[in-house]
Image 1 (cartoon, helix red, strand yellow):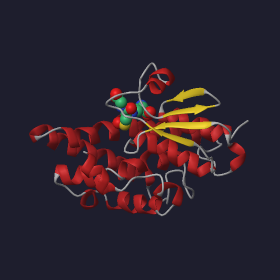
Image 2 (cartoon, rainbow, N blue to C red; image 1 turned 135 degrees about the vertical axis):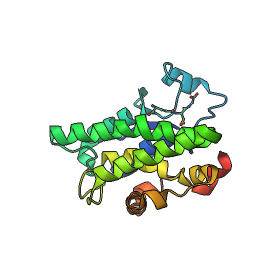
Image 3 (tube, rainbow, N blue to C red; image 1 turned 60 degrees about the vertical axis):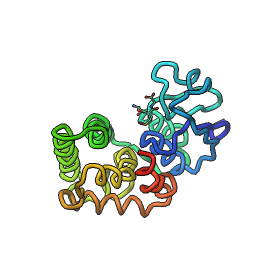
Length: 211
Ligand code: GS8
């Protein structure tokens, strides 16, 4: 039965895992969180995600669902009756939401990883790419409070976990996102006011220490 036997193979600092945590919180689903040691992967993770061997994995009634965006869509479909729809119902709006979540994975995730793992010229390029991706997102957001319009939804959920890493990116990369993308920061603060988000994201200082 939906709502029973829900386990999340999780890693506190993983922005992809944060997506699954926010989606479960949005639907008010109780679950067992199993923190994974990614440096020393346990048998359950290897068995449940033998292809990528990554978190998050949602295990629902013993069956695994892998890849964070697929997990979020699954949660939205299975617990439709719990309200707070994440994806829009209109097919075109849904396609657009999927496009921008995919953009987050292709552009933001890639550039942000380079911001904290490179130095010198490579770091400068990473920062440029990161800011340019955020500017494109700001343009898409426009004057709306959330990417889908008036309500917090799929694209917000896909993107907001990265914000918890900003303190680490900015400190290591020596820049301030707000100077380049003030509207993006306003949007992020708006999302953080939502309890399902704030309680699913770790303290940015902890992430910085971790990095
Ligand atoms: C990415 C998951 C991922 O990279 C998704 O779920 O959306 N496309 C996937 N997970 C990382 C932790 S976050 O950086 C992970 O599990 N890494 C372990 C490894 O690469 O060995």
